[in-house]
Image (cartoon, rainbow, N blue to C red; front, side, top):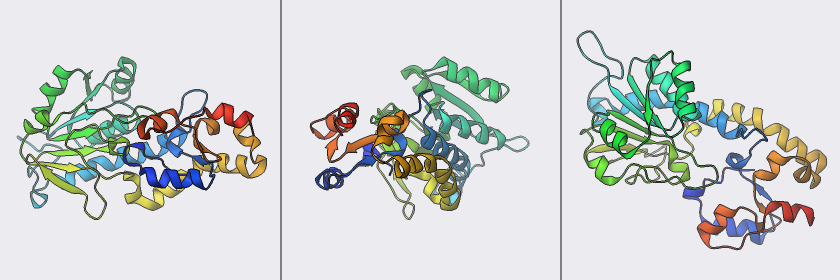
Length: 282
């Protein structure tokens, strides 16, 4: 069991798993019958809660930021936060940024998600469809950009181009949470907790994969809560667990040494066998 992180995965490590005839389950690939991603949801909630404190830190003058607070004070307007993606990360972040007094706008292609967020925020969070026009329009005023796009089992598309980044305010902050899937901002590249930011076109980029690892105790407890039932299923039922538990089967990307994930196979040019076929042959 591990996070695959297709956007930053090393093929040599994956090939080693296959050579050792390993069976590997990706946490973020586990998907229930009602299309819920239980492990990813728990980690995304933590990431969403972390984002305001990270953004606030790098907006400070000492961090080469714009020297502003997230929330406004009397006579001074609040900062503008743009969030791309209204999933668990984006929605949690929006509510927390709003709670700190920031002016929040969320873009998504799914109207139902936007409608749900407006309901949860009591209309205190603004929403708009994620179109190229709206992206350019809101980016020009953004003090903080949160990239929170997830396409299950695939690399994230670059919806924010380098040309768009060049038009952003000097000292503004980009936090690309999608960096685990390759990043949704063209100028992003993976960073580390020990060296989390870099400057590109005078815009601060924070692109740390596995963001919840910065609060390891909270993340570990949350991970254990959702992963334990799947681990117990494997220890109690062994190989039949993959046949009996659909959510677990959906999370498999290597099964007894064979690549069982179509997107991974396409990414690295490997042969692919559907996990259902491999499980039946066991």
